[in-house]
Image 1: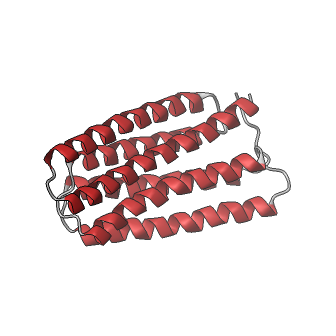
Image 2: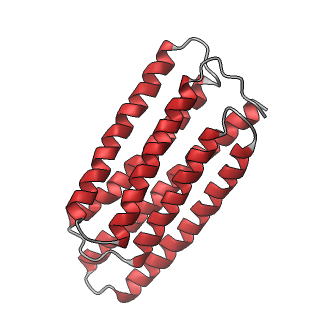
Image 3: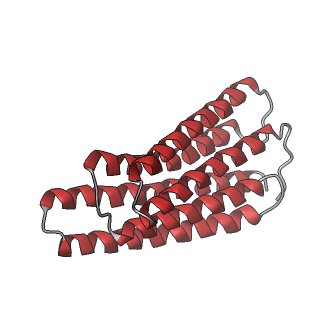
Length: 203
């Protein structure tokens, strides 16, 4: 499969978006692995999320200004939105930490953050291959495998939470944090589904 773009700007813009995703995911991993300077790390994720909003807006503006696009306009829009959703849920997790004043997140949160980072790296690789060949599909398969692993991690983490947490309010807070992190992996899978659609349409 080879896409023949009429305007390579979109590919560059998608790479910028995934680079930004990876940057946020790395901060998220550091946040849960080294639970210190929490306020500054959550603020950094928020800053990166604002950059993501600007990058998303730039793609959509470019889309409205471009007559002939490298692949379907609808798919460009869906891919952009899906990638933005991943970052939004990473930021939502950081916001939960601040809003709920979570002092001791469970190990499952750190494991989920690493799965999110791996997915973001795979998305970056997939986007980088869009203008070349079918390596996109292999990356999408891996993104889905990681999402399945995140499902298992989330279920296990919530199960342990119900076994060990005696404070019902804290249980609700931590359960929601894990669910938001797991949703970020769902959104990464959504982006992979769009990438698969692009490859199939342009095969």
